[in-house]
Length: 216
Image (cartoon, rainbow, N blue to C red):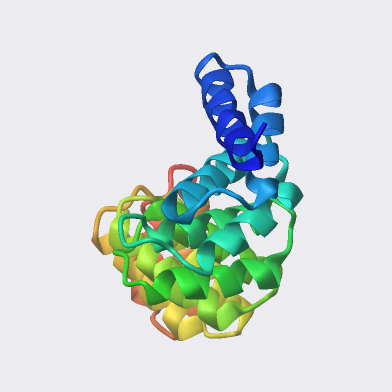
């Protein structure tokens, strides 16, 4: 009959429903427990995090976000603050809220995590959507440092330099990719030859053109 006991029982029911893969009743019970405001300290934090993660997994991003922001205000020492900010960024990403993605990623990066593919990819997408070409260039370079053999990153880097009319850096980047053995296709090689031609280096342009399969 006590309100605290009701909240505690709702929390336990939520956990049991979740363990039995009954997500909707799990969310309902955890919402009762969280909204009661009667759970204390880290127990309350962990319950809210469980609820937020379930909402995120169910693609209820708008409902998950307020919980994640609440969690970010006071993260216990036993928990990972960077994980909360990454989930906030992921939720805003799914809602196409690009400025908020970048704000959340700034908070994430302040916590000193090593560069990883998924967070950087989210950041890059937001920068490209907002046409922030300069910051996007820096992000792609960080992605290249992680996956130097992945040709898509090199192509995006070259495309960004061309977008801001920086043919020199576009050429340098594409030439470096070729030098490092990145698997360039025929179109990449044609572009490299054109860039050499623009820079007034016809001998290298001719050499690259000579590598094309269908050259006449």
